[in-house]
Structures are given as structure tokens and as C-alpha cells.
Image 1 (cartoon, rainbow, N blue to C red):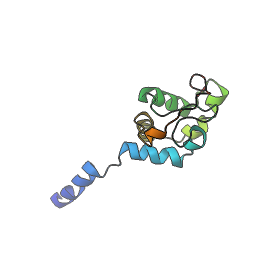
Image 2: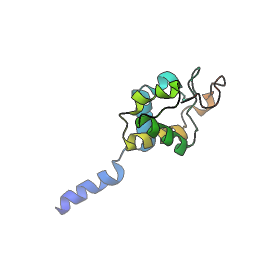
Image 3: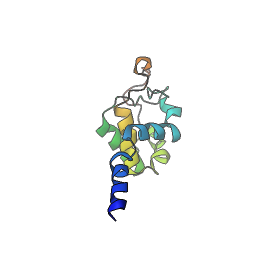
Image 4: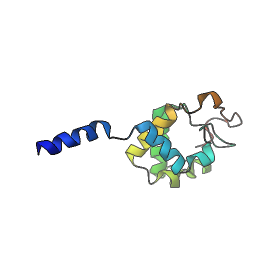
Length: 118
């Protein structure tokens, strides 16, 4: 039993996936970059997400997961958020709020107003 515990301890301490990297992987695998851009700077009417406050992003994703969207554009997010777990939402919002991918190339889409309705 002691050997098993000693074997599992490093996995528990260091084997847990980095939330930033997990969020980055989810952002691209779930198709977020298709609308919000590869630098999360927004595209056309889709809002920029990089550098947004984590509580704001978490609130939005949890509302979408609960099938709450007050605009047509917000309702488009519901199918994307419905299958997300709390851990996945935490990871995606960590990635977006702490965004440090190619920061020198980051250019938010300035044509959107407000948060784009989503």
C-alpha cells in the first residue's frame, strides 16, 4: 500500500494537467478559434476574448451551459457550452484571461461593439 501511495503522489502533485494548456487545447479542439480567432481577438461580430476577466468569462460560459442567452448571437454559444464541465470552463477561462500566446501579434477586432452580444 505504501508503494502504491508513493507511486501516486508525484502523479497527483505534478501529473495534473496545467489549466492554461488544457484551456488552450480546449479552445482549439472545441472550435472557439473559428469565430473568436486564433489569437482570441475576435472576428467580425464575434467578440474578443483574450485578456477578459475570468469571472466574466466563467459567468458567460456557465449561463450558456444552462441554456441562457439573451440575444440571438448569445444563443449561438449554447451548443458549444452545453457539454463543458466546470473544470473545462475553468481551464478555458484561465487560458483566455491569462492569454500569453503571441502577445506582440494580438490585435482585437475593433469593429465590434460592447461584447458582441455573446
